[in-house]
Image (cartoon, rainbow over all chains, first blue to last red; front, side, top):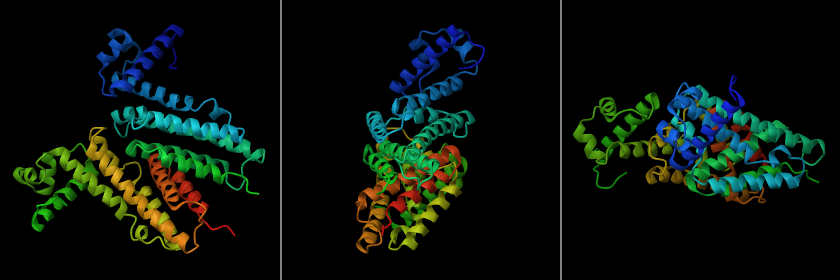
Length: 197
Length: 197
């Protein structure tokens, strides 16, 4: 949340971002500021108040919202990867999420609207990947500490590999419509983390 | 190669596509037809002759060229995955290729210029992924037949997982600039294919 907003102001800003996110999921990220104003019942001066730098600033805020949503969609499992049951629930939640989403990733659509070298867009992605990997690594570390996953693979490396499975699987799903590579890659990576007798 | 072109015609068409690919790698996929004409010393009527449907048709041809290039960059190893030495050479070639390419993937830049639901753009990607996976699966199958890789993992699944490693690793590299997830994921997947004593 940006500094200097009252809680009422922050709520209004959130309402605009959420409304814009819904609209962009339906109609693509090419929607105009006027369409967003109409859908969120916001005046021009209100929109300018919360997003003085205009459309790009609003797009970035919506992208951050969608990035948060990607992590939220994996809860409560992502924050509680403390048993194999929980890891499997997380795996199924991820697969179901991307299967539902299919060929349209709202975050990549949004980021595609910004300049390829846009520093803000890059920060949204990097920040998302770092938070995601940290949560996965914490889960692997917990499992290793309780002898439930092999200690033969460093927790950060394991988290990296799991993140690659999800990102690569989702990317191929967007192109081909098939969820199979995502499932295969996640399952093989998780299998590799099992403790061998 | 489209049908009905003489070999001289096909050579001219290839020259335009290659010139456009070089220009787009330098200046982005937003370059105009006039800029492409100038860079490839092509007249308006020539360009229209080879690409009667205009800019989109040329973009697709360049995308196909870049897709072929992705496979060509992995040769000679990709067509000869018959020993661990060759698999390691392939792994190093892939990592070096994406490290060199860094944050700019010419194919995704090109495909990003076409409509998200463009059937032609989708076909280029699906066709690339299918050819790629078939070559990896052939390599795994050969290794399994010679007891050099475990038979415990189906060759098609292994190929799927390897493709996810490359795609996911490349996607994260584009966002973060780090080649480490690509290396980690490839190494762990290859390690999983080893024959355990």
